[in-house]
Image (tube, rainbow, N blue to C red; front, side):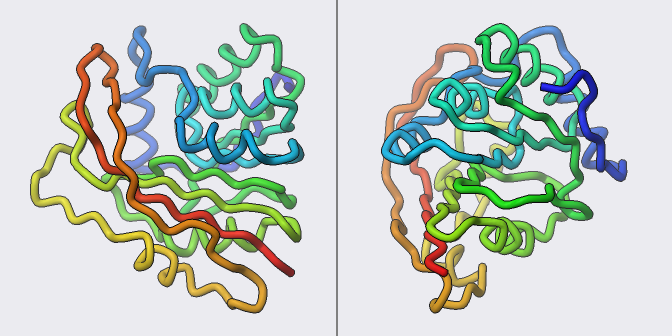
Length: 216
């Protein structure tokens, strides 16, 4: 990994929120990979991966350890610093590149065999469908876009509004407005699992999974 994170960030309220989130001394996540990512990517041949909203880098570091070359993207410099630290600790710093982006304004260059958007949520305005559509267009032929969203309220989440609406996988997929001649959905699902929060608390949660393959 290069000594300096590539910075394409534009600033604003969202950046301040996430910088505050990652500015504390303690971890802001488990630092472990998301299970739906490992279950999916574990069946793929490693290539180039893009991790949107990488947080502390649990997914990026795991992918790099499997042989992927990973571009890890976040709006918060603090998140990227943690990702770089964890990559160095795991001995995979040479396979992880960090880039700071406000994805509402800029997007990483290049093409990818896997784009991962794990719990790509924010309390601020974000053209999410547009970002994810751009991610689908950044896939190589045969590449996979894996979107995993919260499908239920997490007891330990920063957003515990019981009135939160969770779109279903079909709605998310159709919102991408992808040409069926070039992309096909491989999985549209709402599985449940037992999750563990940052303080060890557990709960049964629902995930929303959208996996889209680029076919041409």
